[in-house]
Length: 242
Image (cartoon, rainbow, N blue to C red; front, side, top):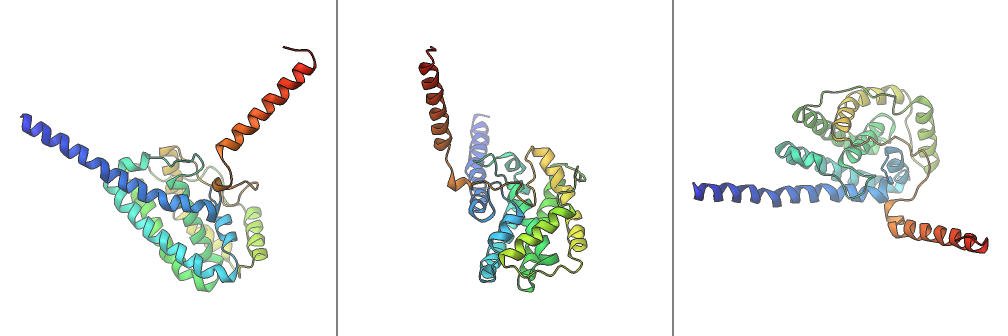
């Protein structure tokens, strides 16, 4: 009995490096989204930053990386569902937000994007959608419709205008209807996972321009608060306060 107890303990401990390794590999691509899709990431920002024709090769390569990432996520998180609860180091990033951003971007490219990138977008969309559906089944999160449309017509128009001005060649004939159909195939599962793990879904378009995580620091906020406190103290002192 003593020997069996030590054996069971050794098996449990041996799982820790496996879990941490899978978590670490998952977070690499999520961190890379910072400079490519903003903080928090959005499909609109990802596409805008890769809209120029000379960046199409980089966009295809990036979608290929996320195709493999989605397959690895499905394999590791289906085997060890506890990994779904592991959170990213930054509060405005998560594996659900990253997966949503890539699915949104892939769906848009399939519906309206340049012909050159559509094939890779289809491959990435297929495996990412597969991962979302299987994970929702494993964690017992039945699909739920979004509380509100994540991409209303007005936002879709602004997205098209932003990408066109950035240099992306768009095919908008019937694109909104095709995109809506593609979104219905994955959004309910993402909503279910978001509610299950309390990780908010990203928007399609950034509401206001904000700095990426790499452009800011917690020390900056601390310095601003310290400066405000010193200014208030000086004002009180000048007024004769204590």
